[in-house]
Amino acid sequence: MRPVFLDRDGVISIFTPDDYVKNWDEFKFIPAAFAGLRKLTENGFDIVIVSNQAGVGRGLFSSEDLQSITQNMLARLKKCGIDIYRVYYCTHRKEDNCACRKPKTGMIEQFISENGEFERERTFFVGDADIDIETGIKSGMRTILVLSGKTKSIDEIHSWNFRPEFVAEDIEKAAEIIIRESKRGTHGKKDPRDCVE
Image (spheres, rainbow, N blue to C red):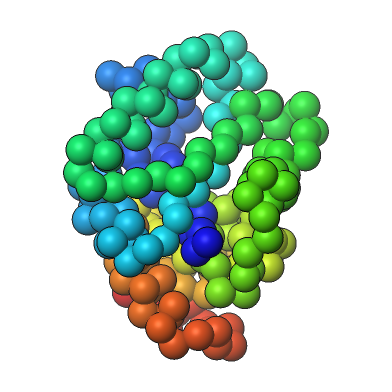
């Protein structure tokens, strides 16, 4: 198994500030998503989506709405030759203080309980926000921040407690890093300012 963990909104689909994607009509793919995800699929990676979806817990859309979005997303990607191995959502609100909402690692732990352990030090977590990077680092993984969603500039990371190993423009560039690094093996941490792809 060669998992790669991805956030959804801001990585695969358009990030909507101060709002949620509540139905399939509101879901829009980031243009680079198809090429990036296809590269990961063709190189034998098991793509795992790990996403906070508190809109369900807030009553803004239903679990059925979220399931419909997911089914349509997977079907669209499948038509493009892209396989998604697993999808995990936390539908709790922040104030629920659950164990699964990022930056907590509950969804990663659930993946392990269902699929077995993996080589964490060789596995990447890709996200567009500080909570994604924190989740990846707390889980013992390597991290890539993409600038296609919530975070728009590398300068924003200087105030973060957890900083990414790499910064990439989007998931296509992140996929290229993952493929390249998987051939090199593990390395020491780098200054993200030197790692913009």
